[in-house]
Image (cartoon, rainbow over all chains, first blue to last red):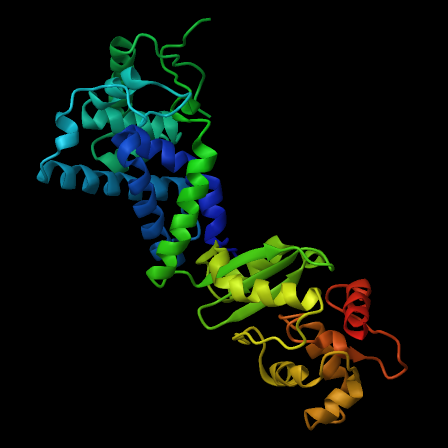
Length: 167
Length: 203
């Protein structure tokens, strides 16, 4: 029998903080991503001592981020959102050096499931079976959602340097 | 450049500003975790004349001071196993300890006034560690004298073990315990560190 070492939570943040931030950005845009990141890691820290030893920490974190992002979107749809009413204009909210307003517009216009599948497969690198578990439906449906999402991104954002294979 | 139809770089949604953003978010997480009562162990590292020291505290008090040669990652792994895996680098809880250590190393402090969490030691070892602060700054005792001090004059070897396993070196002054022949004896931070502390206190 091996004695498993539950590593300090700081290591989890160090190893997965960047990926979770990028996932939240795809799900919610630059604006709300940071709040979702904070909510995700606080909830994860609360639950961490009970996480099964053989659990995949990244899939676990993405699952929490998925729920937190849905909470954020629901909260946003319940309240009048004056920010949403303002026509898109260049702001300081973009990510300097990465993407641009057009890309975020393209990501935002994806159907939820496509955006989620793109985030979880292409950004977090999760297998489709895992993604199906998070968003519901079959593995094939998750694969199709990701493929359709990428196709739509290319169509709506021709300038996208969408290249390279997921790690 | 050819674009493969089914792949996209995961870095595409990254940003050069991510490192700053993440550093800020991690600081915020430390504060939120503290506020929510989730920060079971906060830690930081400080520089000192005896090398980088790891400082770790529970809500009860300082639980661990560790030398570089003890391997800080291993020390944190052990804390994660023994106390709780809810461990974050969160310097604020260690502010007082860091300040007092700075004062000590600059010769401006002789007694530490910090809440301590002695839960890493039990029984006789903890008893010995509770008594060690009675050895004043610049003073030394032998292992045998400490055994007498704790009311168990035959337990010289056990006193040696208690000193060697002191989870709070420097703050709990096991460096002030020497061999009966006057030689310096072992030390968790290495004999060089022990000599440095004794020289500092003799100045």
